[in-house]
Image 1: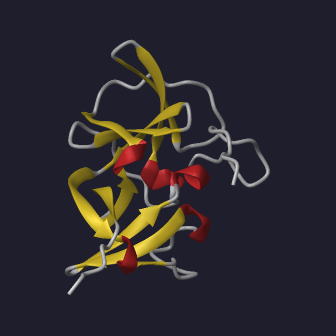
Image 2: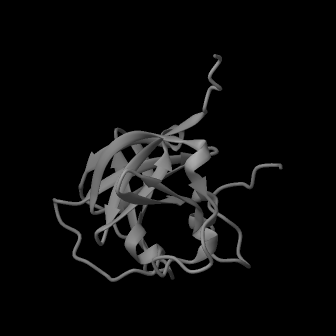
Length: 158
């Protein structure tokens, strides 16, 4: 009997306010401990400033605030996920970076209209893995400044 090969996506799982979120590992450069952030003038509260990571200046956003969650103190327990989308690198402040898992593509479902009070355009899907419900994020929309503005990253041709 020939068993059909099920494709899977390798994802990094991280925590925000007790919820588990995931991003594809191909978008992740590294996971860093919290480091000093140089504040820069800006309009958006979620843009915390920039960091100097091994000689590269990288903008940092507080993912809790970007997803319109509650504000929290940024301390040494937080992590910065360095994400790459296109040519742009950005640091994402998260509560914890938990693990890397393979998620079979056949268990990824479209995001419901209302989930975890996160804007639906920020979610690419949801997956139930064992007893865990993972919210898969869409970095292109998260890095979009707003629906009418330009984005931090160039849109890919579809």
